Length: 245
Image (cartoon, rainbow, N blue to C red; front, side):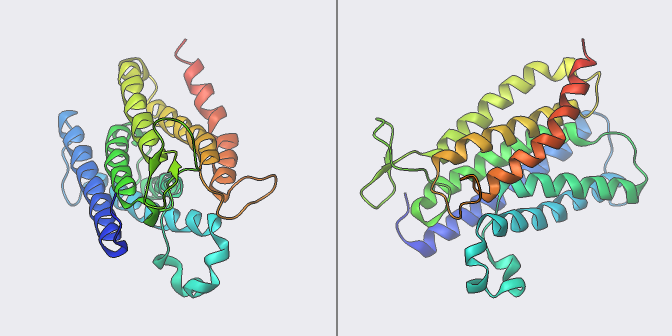
């Protein structure tokens, strides 16, 4: 783990940017593999731009929902983009950005399935940056006596929740890869499965992290976002999954 704050934030930012860059390259590789040609005038770029803009806004919005007590100290609305980030907000914001971009580009077909594995790839790289940043990032876990607890620099063994998430993403990758051919009959289902699984995961694993600002009934802002998103999104996923039978 990196103890120096400036170096920790720099390494974290580099790995986050690397994760996004590799994920974007992976996305366009999959497009070419599927015979979809991408040019600057192609709607695929409109969709990608919509995804990135939506993710940029969403990850900040959910961060501030999770950390409202820091709002005044960061200058309020003027400091909106100076705060941290939220993967949950990025995913949900990216989803909304894609849907808006598709409407603007006149696209009706589902585009989400090609994002699934690039997103998981970027997530794993980004969480490595979170892990290396240690106490300088807000993704570490609560104290634990389990033998794999890690001291991030304060003398306390904690749940390495960043590593848990990397493992979860790798297992989800393997599970979705096994279902990929079957899900091809229902475009968009693979993405829905990935997003629903991740929201459910975060609803649970965030209970192993320090509570930055408790909302009733003892849930964090991110957990509330996951819960509300699942209420809307899980039924859509289950309905489409049943059509495969």
